[in-house]
Image 1 (cartoon, chains in turn brown, orange):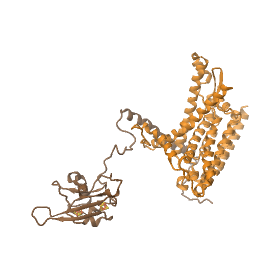
Image 2: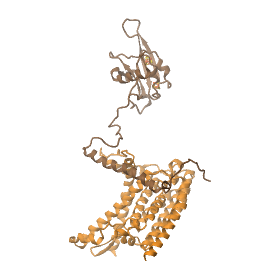
Image 3: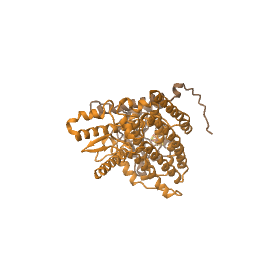
Image 4: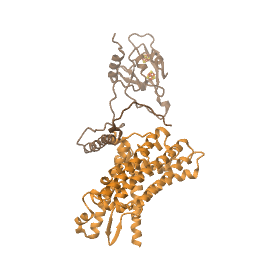
Length: 189
Length: 358
Ligand code: SF4
Ligand code: SF4
């Protein structure tokens, strides 16, 4: 016995005869069909710059991701080439996937120099879940989510990025830094 | 004798070339491309030869290559013979129907009467339905032999659906027969030389019912319960791969062409252009001599016929990409409680109108 679900839908007789409503639907789809079909022609002839269809030919064409997009996390590199990170380990703790590995290095007390820095800073992108917790946890504005998501590799071992690979000049991250300052209200107190 | 044989051979080769060689592969591309364009996408366009993509047309070749090179898998516990046989049973009737489908009129070429139909049977219409329903065996055997619950469910659904809609289809045809008074497809086509004698005007209700029933016969959306992906994986061909799967796939596309051709002949004026009779056309090209003008008119009318077929294929694709799937009980309800009584009413009304007009 069929089990009927009462969805409380009252159809008018016009809808019940089914055919007109179907034809209405088909007019909508065929309108899209024809407008796209003939919308292509001026695009291919070059007389029209904008294509009606919004599909992006991915590897050839790329879109600018919104600034809130969380791609792979990268380390900020100061203008003098030194990492901004102080190897405090907060990101390591905040990371829910345990994919950050830090070995700190520190100077022996010289004045006016960097006190601490990471000797080893590895992020295993094969484990990273791109949650952004590391960015949120960092007190030094040293780790940021970039807009790069093209990190597929043929070998898992290659997905372990070292400090040299992770360092990104801070100038490239300016927008994201501003965004995080607004988002997390860092340095605004 | 030899000339007749040669002409028949050419016609057979032409039909097989057009259906299997042209329509079946092209339609896989059309299906993807049309659905893409209807949904504001671009569709398949990545297969390329030397960097040249030809708007995705090479996907047909890529598809065929894929089908040929895939592993041909027979599941454990399956009946090997029937499992291998059923795709053939499914695809052969689809091609066989074209034996009686006329794709043009009669022409005089080099003093030979050329009738553009492979075999001009007196019961052509019956032959079409008899052969087309044979394909059901292919689907049912496919589901039964592959030792899989989903397949069995799919094939049971196919069987019940086919039986239900075959009834409607047959009764719809009765209306057409009453109007034209012939079962010969060539005669039915020839009568529709007069624009106002098109089946669309004489049998408007029959047209829609036949369209619905034939889509149900072909098991395409909105009647695709036998292969409903979201319910029973892929229905009767769940356990098929490689070339055998390709054959099921091909039979579906060839059946689309068959439906288009039958609809064109029964309801859409066959190979005739509205308001332009064959005699008028022949008169226009009289300066080419008998043979020349006949060949030209033949080419035009075959072209017209196949453009109508293409229109119907487009229509079926539009329906397929517009409507959602019916529920199983809805299909049965539509078949037995709505279409069947309507087709009986159609016969009654047709009979009364014919009686009154005479
Ligand atoms: S994004 Fe999340 S998972 Fe990835 S490194 Fe940062 S905290 Fe760990
Ligand atoms: S990236 Fe930030 S949170 Fe992580 S160790 Fe360096 S300073 Fe600390």
